[in-house]
Length: 233
Length: 289
Ligand SMILES: Nc1ncnc2c1ncn2[C@@H]1O[C@H](COP(=O)(O)OP(=O)(O)OP(=O)(O)O)[C@@H](O)[C@H]1O
Ligand SMILES: [Mg+2]
Image (cartoon, rainbow over all chains, first blue to last red; front, side, top):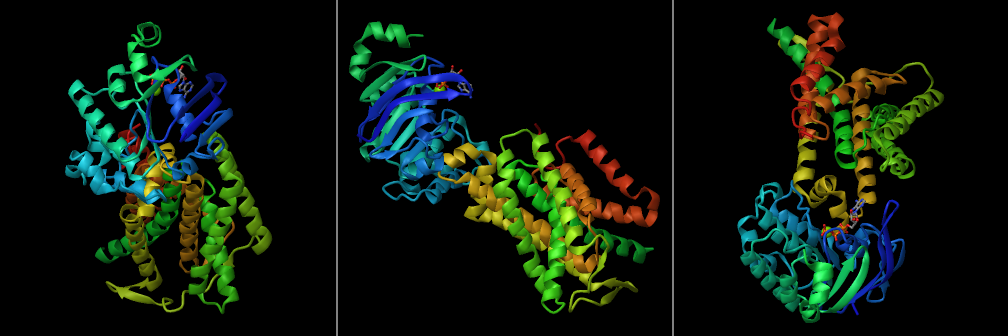
């Protein structure tokens, strides 16, 4: 087990968002957090990353307890975060946005600028461009590439397929398969069930801050009652 | 006439450089930490007094004072950030202003307690004590030195922020603290480092002012912090480029004001600020909000 989250409760101020959330991700898996708008997917990822720390429960990465650690410490243990709004540093160039992650990470491994640019060739053409001037699609690849540059064990991806054309979503699924083939474990939050079925092994469905269903992606895909109740728009 | 204009310009430039030194630290701290540090003028004052104390102790040599004095003040800055300022980052601006203003009062009183309320005369800088002829009139060579230090420092800061990884990490953290921390930046430590460095810049300004003013006075930080605030505002809060240009403009304007319109000296400065704020509320290089 790479990530084991047990009974976390997370609050924004006084509103109790995550209620007793438990789930786990095995090494090498791609796991989805599913659910409608505002159910707590982003909050779950932020809880793992230490950005909105849970008040109680446990968040274990292998045998290391992450709850109580600051985000920078969690990052150094090998967890990377790709936020839904991408958060590219506007002042830095594309290349600097990639390299800064490598400079800040104590970890080494397969991923470097060359390998990331092989995965997303457009980033090689944009090296000197400021983050500010990059398109939404480019920023998405850059944000994913930046996460890889720290050579993480686990990447948390928030809404990777959001806002992309169907053709681009298919390419993204290919990239995620490629990333996975190099031993990176992925926990992603997404609303596109078809995309999740392509790339994920298992999924957890969240509703109002609780996990209400879990299963393999094939199970969830085939379970019309569950899809209708929790996922259909 | 030409002679007079050139000399007024030189005087304005050297005055501008002191404002720049103070404004640079103020701007850096505001840009990265988001705190408007009123006590920055006190660091300028402490820089001057510590420089004086060190030069006294080490054979009346100003250069030792300039080298070591600001470092001592940087240590004071460390204590201020680590034990006080850090507690108010999350709070609203008025709390931060209150806290830093409390330090202004505290440091003014401490200076009076340790060095007395009277002004203290200071020796000139060895090697730069004389003056040189420029267009038939004498100009202190030390002031030329100050005029050279300002742009060098600007260049150094630019290189640090744009061309080193430390600088890129500082810029990244100032634009997005949370993302920087998710990538492994220990943000509180970075803030401390930037505050200490900004303090050192202000104190360096104070140290450099010792031979220039020839006189130390408690409260000497107050005039300059006001000018540095004006400069930071017209340059665009958080923009070092803006602070540098703003300091030049304010230095020159106040030199011309003193020479040709002595009664309206500070008045001109504030007219300029009001004008800039009306025309471009975010300052020369500030981002529109
Ligand atoms: N900063 C915040 N302050 C207060 N409440 C918040 C904050 N961020 C999110 N919330 C609330 O927490 C709940 C969960 O939000 P979260 O962003 O985790 O949902 P989500 O599943 O990621 O939704 P989406 O699909 O829209 O991204 C929502 O009800 C939201 O209104
Ligand atoms: Mg979300």
